[in-house]
Length: 566
Image (cartoon, rainbow, N blue to C red):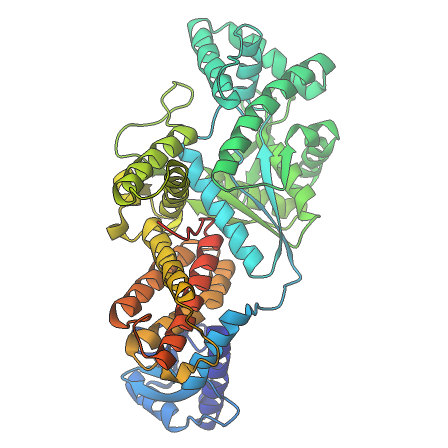
C-alpha cells in the first residue's frame, strides 16, 4: 500500500507544482519523496526548487502546500502540511483499512519481464567455504530473493574456477596424498591442498609439474580432465552441502574450462587483439590489454600461450549476457580493480556491462585467515558453533521442550543469526562477526525478529484455543498511535522490496525487519489483545495476524526461517 500512497502523493504534488508555476521535471532529485519520522511520507522538493528560484526552502514549501489540493479520487491521503522546508503527508483511515485487507488477501505487485543472472559465492573448489565466503554467499542469496520478490526472473550462477593454480596444486597433490574418506569432502580436499602447498614450498621444482598439469588440462588431455573433474566435483559436493545448510541454492554451476574447450576464450582474445590496445610484456610474449582510465593493464594470455582467468571471465560474461537482460556480480573488495577492468574490456567487446555489488570483508574478533596456510574458520565450524550456542540459550529458556524441538529451534535461530549479521549493514562496510552479539535478543538481530514472529503466533494460537473470532472486524477501532504506526510499517514491505531491488541494497530489508519487530513489540506492550473488549479484540487479532504474515515474508526474503515458538 505504501507504493500506492507514494504514487498518489506524486500526482498531488505535481498538480500543486504546476498550479504554482514551478518547473520540476528537470530536477535531479525529482520530487524527492522519503520516509520520515515526522510524517507518513515527506517531500524535500522545496530544497531543489529553492536553489533554482532563489527563495528560502520553507517559503517554497508553504507556497506549494497553498496550491495543493487532494481530489476525491485520491483516497489514501488525509492532509499535507509544510513543516519548515519539508512537505509532510499523512494517511487516512482508508489507507489503514486497505493495508490490512491487502495483507490478509496476499496481493502482490505485477511481475516484471526482465531476466537477471546473478553470480555469487563462486569460491575456488580447493576446500570448504570459510567466513570470508559467507558474506558473498548471503548478500548474493538475499539479493536473489529480493529480486524474485520484486517480480524479476532470476537465474543464480556459481562460477567454478577449475583452471586456476590452486586447483592444479590440489590435483597434483591428490596423486601423492590420499583424500580422507572419513571427512566431509571439501575438508578432505583442503587437507590435500595445504599438504601439497607445503611440499611445493619445500621443493620449488614441483611447481613445474603443476604448471605442466595445468597446460594439459587446458589442452583437454582426457586423463587429466578426469582427474580434475573428480577432485572438483568432490570438493563442490561439500560446498553445496554447506550452502544448503545456509538455505542457499544455485541454479547453475558454470565451469570456466567450458569456455576454453569450446573456443570462446580464443575468440575473445582474437577480438581484443583487433579492437583493443594490445601490447606485450617485457619478455615479449605475455599479452596485455591497455584500458582507458585504468593504469594497470589486463593480462589476457600467459607467456606460454595459455589463457588467464581474466580472458575466461570475459568469455563467461559474453555467454551469460546473451541469456538475460541484466547481469549482476557480487564481488569482494579485493576484486574492485578486476571489476573495473572487466567492465572496460566488455565495452570493447560490445558486451553489456554487469552491475557490481562490491562488499567489504567480514572478520572474527581475532586472527587473520589463510586457506593456503591452514589458518581458516570454515563455514561448517562457524555454523556448528553458533547452533551450539543457540542451543544453550534455548535449553536455558525452554526446559519444557523435548530435545528434538530444542535442536530444531536452535538451528533456526543460529543460522538466522549468522545470515542476518552478514547482511544487516551496507555491503560497503566492514563487519566483525561476534557470536554473542548475533544471538543476543537485546541486540535486535535475527533472534529478536524471530521472537516477534513467534510471539504473534503464540497470541493467535491462544485466540484460537479460546474460540475468539475475527469475523466482521472493524479496522476503524484501531486508533492508538502504536496501532497506526504498526500498520504503516506493515504497508512498507513492498516499498522496501522495490527499493532494495532497484538499489541492490539487501541491508534495507534487514533494517526494515528490525524496525517492524520493534513496532510490533511496542504495539503488544501498549495494547492488550486477548483481554480487550470483543470488537476491539477482533481488530487487534487481525493486526497481529497481518504482523505475523509480514514478519514471515520479511524473514523469508532474508533467507531466515520464521519459528512459531521460541
